[in-house]
Figure 1 (tube, rainbow, N blue to C red):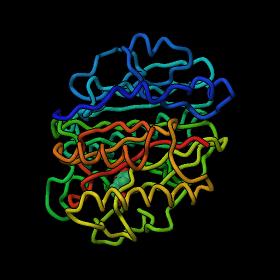
Figure 2: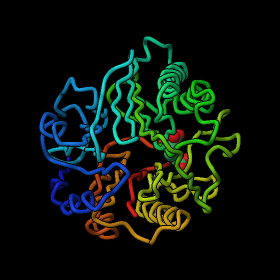
Figure 3: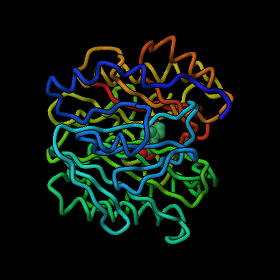
Figure 4: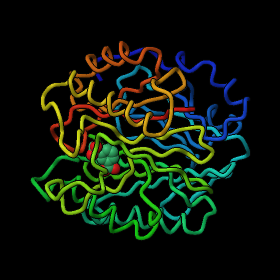
Length: 338
Ligand code: 3EB
């Protein structure tokens, strides 16, 4: 992709010390390196590559995300837990588990399931059935990447079909409440749905944003089935907040159409409101890895400069992705450790 930004690994030094101090939540970092080395490190629960240039690995803990990164080279996102990790495959699903935490991922081809709705339903059914038999059945955080997310008008938009299928497929898996989530559009072909999650053997604490209507209460104009996610999840143990995809949504409305700096500013206000709502101190730091999903590659330089100025030292992985409302230009998600 056009602009390129520094390697992110220089921004996450010092995390090892935090880990030795006894962190319980998985440690998420952006790293340089190849899958073999990163997966061989003790406690690696998952490693995520980004884009068509990402290396390949047959290890069930490796996932190549269908979003191009604006960095050269693209970093690898690594999740690490304090303890031995087991991993394997179960039908179309791959998983790993250790220290009470679970990673699971599924990638489905829409051509085999008949469109975005039924593919989402199949993915969530498979994940739900797998989780049902696991001690780590409390889903904390889930990511959804689908092609051509804004294609189709009104209720026929692919994102809205995805929301219907997700709700239909999840059954009672989220009867206790929805996890934190992200849903972003990729450009790697319409047919490819990727869903992956972090679950735990204990329940987390859902966090909503008082500036925003909870997504599951969005009014009818956003689709027949409202999106099923919480704005954030305080992970069990209380040492990390998993932050959902956050954009310039105020109340239930999209704010600042066609105004990128204003959308960025509103997004940061929403992120700060979430920290307050979670009872955390203000601000993000060098150990709070974030992702910025940018709709138009031509906006990446502006987004990067804005975030460098407003969030100095914070590792922000910049990705090319479409936000689920066509008027939104940018979305940010990530982690904040206590
Ligand atoms: C929003 O605030 C923006 O459908 O899982 C953000 C995070 C958004 C998750 C989802 C959608 C989802 O409504 C969109």
